[in-house]
Structures are given as structure tokens and as C-alpha cells.
Amino acid sequence: MGIEVAISQAGGAGFAPPERVEARLMPWAAGMAVVGWAIALMVGLTIFYFGRVMGSFVPGLAVPLTVSGAALSAWCAWHVWRCWRIRQADRPTVIVSPAGFEDTRIGRLIPWAEIERLTSDQPGTRSYLRLYVREPKRFLHRRTPLWRGAARVAADGALVSSLSELEATPQAIIAAAEAYRTSCAL
Image (tube, rainbow, N blue to C red):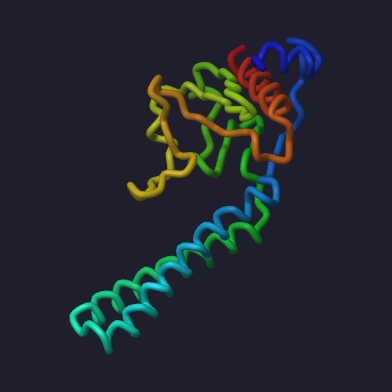
């Protein structure tokens, strides 16, 4: 669904945006990171266990497997704890306000003056909001090369925000974002 359709459904081009639109992750989406890291923790503990058992069969493998299993388990346990804390905090994931657009999965607040244009995209059943800003990498979280999550810049230079797993409807978020952007451009 395009932005024009979302705005017309929300009351036309003269749509007055609400004070602030907040959208939290649905419970199943918020728990997926915890589940993923818990599975990785189980793999690390399995490697640790096999390192301890292999000591009696193959002495050369015991120490490397035990140490790598312990290190992997500790790293994954920290991530499980961190993801659980984030899930328990129940903070909004996407915030559309007079100050700008903020998606905590992407990075920091993007002021409306920095946003050149917005487009929506719906491949299949997912909805995305594409934000074209002057310097997109300025607004991204720093991530490790192994995990970038939603912090990505598309090939055409847009910051991409996934709206499908949020409690608020994608149409409401898109309509509010477009209304704020056009009101700030005037």
C-alpha cells in the first residue's frame, strides 16, 4: 500500500498527525531474539560437554572443545540476558513524533529536516517504510559484522524500517510519518 492510500484512509492530505505515535513489538517478535540466543547457548553447552567427554577418548581435542564451548556459552548467555532485559523493558520500537522518526532497531532519532522523502514497500505480507536521508550511516547503530539486524542501508541509500511485527498498523505509522514530514517541510 502506498503512502497516498494510507493518508487518504487516515483523513486526506490535511490529516493532522497525533501528538506522538508509538509502536511496540508484538510479543512473539520480541521473544524471537531470546529464543535464538537460547538455542545458540544450548549449542555452546553441547560443545563444552563434548570437550569434557572427549578428554578420555582424544586428549588433543579436549582442551580446544572445552575452552571454545565455555567461551561460546558465556557469550550466548550474555546475549540471552541482554535480550531478555530488552524484552522486559517494553519500550516502544518505533516512535513518530514532532521531533522526528525513531526506530530503535535502526539507530537514533532522525529529525524531519533530515528526511528528504518517504516511500512504503509491501513485498508479500511484510510492510516496510523507506526513509531517504542525507547521510544515512549517521543514524545507524554500530553493529558487529555478524549481526546487523534491522540496521541496514538499502542499495538505493534508504534506511529501511520493518513495520510488520509491530502492534500499530503500518498504515497508521506511515500516515503519521508523512503528515509530520509534510508539515515540517512547510
